[in-house]
Image (cartoon, rainbow, N blue to C red):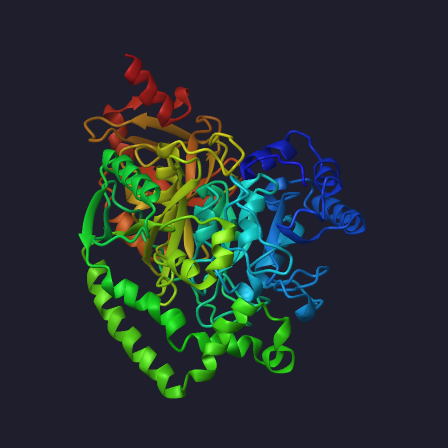
Length: 604
């Protein structure tokens, strides 16, 4: 097996900043690799690693050693084996299907361009058909906590190698829950983005109109960070979409809908774990609204009982017609249902889905999202092999409807059940609310105090840096006082979808004043002659252009937005103050920033 580090992205970045080298860290991973670990289908060879290390060294030299320009420099990751990686075969867990891709999938190429290194391709339910992790000729991937239980699928290997701490993140795919169920069953984060945010060019389709690339990680910070690097409009992908205006943060007391009728299929321990999660969330102010979940269950039924199964047949049509015996028998039995479907059935399904979407839209008008168990139970491998269809269907109870309804979802670890097996919850929202879910997920993960995967490690405060902004048009905005992170007015940035880029300093031509009579207390930043000021601490945020005007309208006199010069010479929009207000203000320049002033007041 690969040696476990259980490092998050931030810890990998920190290690390299402190002098560690890919030659040592990645060589250790590769040298400890074992083909006996069936979470992997293929692994990086020593010769491939040597070439990669040489390329990494050259690229680092090109950016003059500036690691911020290669934010994933030397960080290993794994890729589900239905996603192309140049230099590796793509098998989809079917050796007879295997081919050598001429280039890497778009999402993989973007991560590699940021410096990340693919360590290997991971096992899966064949052709991404299943939520169990058992439908593979390479063997059933065992749960990372108890080998007698399933890992979940179809992205089984991708979830397990993260849960065991072998890599800090991995890529999966999600059509019916494949990026969420294995996350919930292995105590990790599973990010299922809005379809079209991450390109599917270079991904072998399951249901092409519903597929998306998903991200597994130990923390929400890491999952969102990777999604942002990998995302972006791709003209080669007909289902790729341009991200619209970012949504703001969820309220501090969000309203979540939960099913009035929850199905546990006899698993009382899962039911107890969900109730415990609701109690924790209630303590933070979350509000729960029980709703009739029938529309969602009806949508879920369309995925395999309706004509959408024909998409799976289209993806494998040539193989099924020429060599059907090489397809896993359970997978084949599911896909061949398409032979009984007609074009009329497809249209009837579309009509039914459109009607159900209207019902769901009305539900979302009074809530901030859905909160559900990631999976209603966890099964022994022997039980799944004995009853493969029914138990698989049950696992998709709270996942199958999301892509059909054009939603996004975030699977979050919720600790261990009374029997020591993992349990997870999932938050779900309409398309393009990915940032909202991530912000909530960070709150949950810091409050729930859940260990990371199966490593036993506690959550550490070491987020990756620099933060990657969303792929929408933004304006860099420097804030200096009450809008700083953790300060009273910071919510005005977050509710407009602004993203923190960096903490830095102004040029040394500014003086900072504590203005008189402002509520909440606010500073005034005044430009002065060179040599008469000091460098003042500021945060630079990426503000969506569409929300910039509404933000500026909130700023009271004597403050305004002007152009600030940063210590490195960059000019950005930022807070300025009219000179007349300084007469009654306290000069706090010597403290270097607003936080230091607030701290000095609190001490007093």
